[in-house]
Length: 240
Image 1 (tube, rainbow, N blue to C red):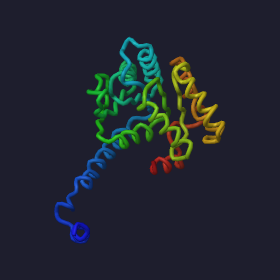
Image 2 (cartoon, helix red, strand yellow):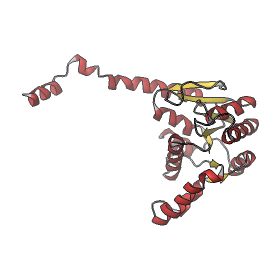
Image 3 (cartoon, helix red, strand yellow):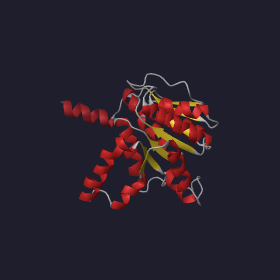
Image 4 (tube, rainbow, N blue to C red):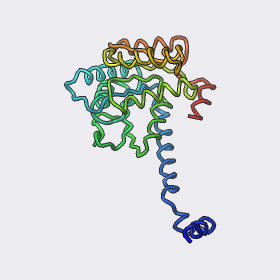
């Protein structure tokens, strides 16, 4: 009987079935993408900064991110962060002190209760995947500061997209060598040694310590090439 009822409902859906909230949610997701595309396309060139939400303003990592963001802003880059506290706040604060836009891509999380106060442009997302596309699609570089699972997720995301050719090649900079040494050693000594990544993949990122070095590395990468995506790269980004 139960199987017959299910079969009947599949072949004769009720109005309630047709108004499944999961289906209607697609329109909210579309709205997030449309607003993000329209507003972020005006913020170029930009650099996406990542790091822990749990760093207090007196923490050395906070000050490192703030100084790096200020130098990037002075160099003409909009600075994009997750819009929350900790290193995200430091990134927006540093950019806010400079002449270029400070952008926050905000999402409601247990450890990120409100947007920080240093945003010229603030976008709010309900869906992680829509927010992550905005970080990647318009970035001329990624600068990753010490952080937790969320930071590692963003790092793994961009490494995978660049490695697989689903995103254009951009500088990926890990700031503060002592923090990243264990991970970089594991990439080299385990992943590359076991053949789960190629030796050439170790060149997708670099580890730096000083804010000015990060700015210089981005300009060195683009020396002789445009920061704007080529026609081929624009085609790749359309499929992101």
